[in-house]
Length: 120
Image (cartoon, rainbow, N blue to C red):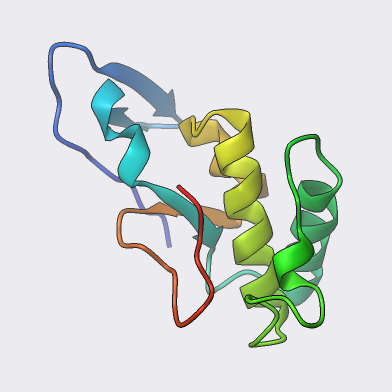
């Protein structure tokens, strides 16, 4: 399935094209976006994303370690989503910072739950 996201466009927007589609993101829209794993991604892809993200400067993955507030659920999807969002934030929240070879998706609804807070 191929998905394209279209956000409201203002005078200060930038366009980014990929393949035949195009999407636009306002400069002031950056704060209300998170990056999570696509539910359709395979576990081996998510584990690769987790390893990559947690190995980058500015990404601190303590919260998905045992005892951390985001350790549960102890799943590849949960841990990868949290780590991918940390990378997305550290890298500047550009659309391409959530690509992860097609396994990441930018969402506008906060994925935080319980004591687990996904940073903006």
